[in-house]
Length: 125
Image (cartoon, rainbow, N blue to C red; front, side, top):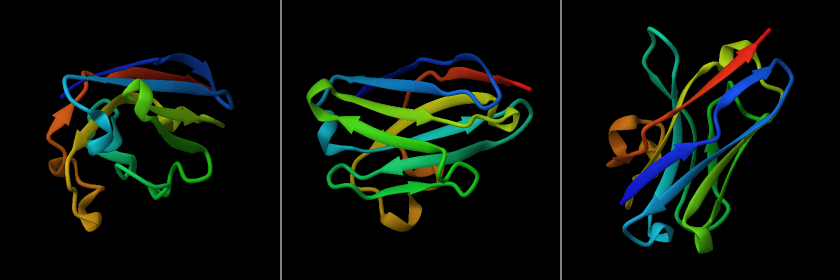
């Protein structure tokens, strides 16, 4: 499956942004999906993940209550709604996917087989 993330940009602190991840190649609905981010000079960190079916989602503590992951199987897409953005949210955001991720490992980048190219989010203070 090929992933393409887009929707990043420059936003002021307190603002909102919605990232999209479009999938092509295979039926996206059979994949678990996630969003990760990487700030300059730092490692790639887990942001959120959602199972292939149902409403169960996982969030990093730093974004809980502010970010929401959703997916539209009909459009083969995953979204990341980001509200109340902070300067520390500045990073390149990546969408990722894999099949059959073990629940305890959804926060690890190594659990994902497919990655989008990343989209830059810059939050100004």
